[in-house]
Image 1: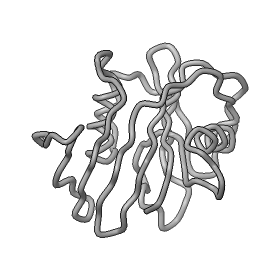
Image 2 (image 1 turned 45 degrees about the vertical axis):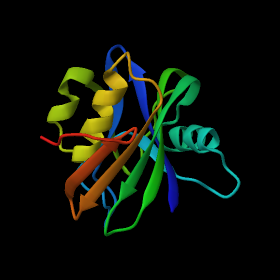
Image 3 (image 1 turned 90 degrees about the vertical axis):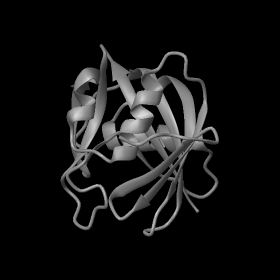
Length: 157
């Protein structure tokens, strides 16, 4: 199973989002996502998150929170994603070779073109009562068919 990270960098009630517009044959083409990527050999989830943030944004995380593990099951393959939020960082944003980085107000996030499953975990990390969670998202093609949070099935739509 592929191991990846995804991080939402917070500042002034906004998240730094990546509009994936630059790569050909990108499963995330034209969607808005957080910052992250695949583990390199020997990396922990935290190591991967820090490296990916620096590579994609130029920023260095100073304070972060490990929010959950999201398992994706799909006909395109399975993936385990380690989800983080960062609320303190240093550095200046650089151009990203995967798309356009933009600060988006949190209240506007769910109106952007994104995966349905991303909306599920964005709601979870917005909930101040939500601790570390395990979420399994099942896709058929681009369609989210099932979401299971901490062993309980969620109602979709």
